[in-house]
Each structure stands twice: as C-alpha cells, then as structure tokens.
Amino acid sequence: MNSSSTVLGAGVSRQKIAAKQRARTEQQNSLSTDEIYQKVYVAVLEYRLRPGTKLAESRLAAIFGCSRTRVREALARLANEMVVEQISQRGAFIAQPSVEQARDVFELRRIMEPAILKRLIETLTAEKIAILRAHQQLEIQARALGDNPKVIRLAGDFHRLLAELAGNSVMASNMRQLTVLTCLAICLYNAPVPTSCRADEHGQMIDAIESRDLEGAQLLMANHLDHIEESLRLDTDLAEPDLEAIFRM
Image (cartoon, rainbow, N blue to C red; front, top):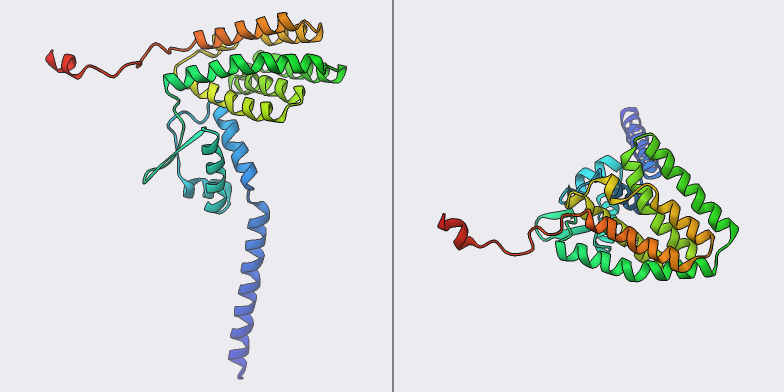
C-alpha cells in the first residue's frame, strides 16, 4: 500500500469516527419520546397549540433534534389520549372536540371529581394540604403577573393534582386526559380565561378539603365545573346546516 492510500484510509477512518461522535452527541442531546409528549401536552394546555394545528413529523423532528420515529411514538400516545387526531393521508392534528364530545368531557368530570375529593379527604394529610397551598400560590403569582398561558396550565394541573394526591393512579391518568380535552374545548369554543376558571374557586375548594368538608368541597367542584361549561359557546353548530334554506335565498 502506497503512502497516498494510507493517508486516504486514515482520512476515511477519521471521518467515520467523527460521524459516530456526532451521532452520539445528537442522540444525547435529542429529546426522548416522553419529553416530546410532554412538550406537546404543555403547549396544548397553555393554548400555544390550538385545535386543528398540523403536527408534521419531519418539522417536529427538526425542532426537537430527534428522529421521526420518536415524534411518531409521541404523537401515537397523544392520539391514544384523544389529544391528537391522526388522519390517513393527511397526518396528525391537534384534536378539535365536537360539541357533543365537549359535553361528554364535563359529564365524566362531574362523575369523577366528587369521587376524587372523597378519596382525597379520606386520606388527607398535612403534607397534601401543603402541596395544594403551594400550587395555589403559583396560580396567584401567575395571575398577578398576567401570565395567562401559565394560569391556564396551572388551572388544569390543579385538578390533576387533586387526583394524584387522592392516590388513585387510574383517576389521575384519566384526569390528565380530561383536563387537556377541557382546554381544547375552551380554546375551540371561545371561553374567556377569567370566566372559564375563576381566581377564587380553587382556594375555596382547598379550604373545604382542609376542613374535611366533603359535601362543601363537592358542591364547590360542581359549581366550578358549571361555571367552566357555561362559559363555553356550546349552543353552536349542533345541527347540520339546512342547505335548501341556504340556497333558496
């Protein structure tokens, strides 16, 4: 082997080593499937990703510095939770709950959340109250700063937190899904944030929980959910348009 071949071979080897090092670095720096899932989830909670937004795998992979496979896995998980809708030949989109689906979400929440409160009060500790109070302070601070995206996310997180502190993993998982679907409904049906989730209602619920007033806490929760649903414009698009009437004009 002559000297030029040796040099060329050494150059190729160095390139391969450098390529492997770059691949390793990219692998270390790129987001995991769980991290991608969480970033999309939080963006929905904060209304930064609105219903109907297209989620192109290649674009997200470039943004997150990861493979399309990881993006696809995260989107599949979100689709399983009804946060993302996957349409054949078109791709993945942030879900757009129908009026009927929005009503179904609130119906299920009215069944689940009183049960969550019951379990939480039965297993209540000073530490759990401290966690709720700390979360309340975060909400107060976000409102004071006028940080609406954070207010929205924390408001949804409050209900998920109740379920987690109640100690039922299935309820907590379901509440995680229901809170994000509620956010999508609020975003889609034009509920103003200040009226959809009132500043004082979470604090009142914590007071009732701390006093172990189950009936009071459940009544507050029922009223709270009523306020949120009533702030939505769910009286629109309930029926198919009458095409004959439209074109008769």
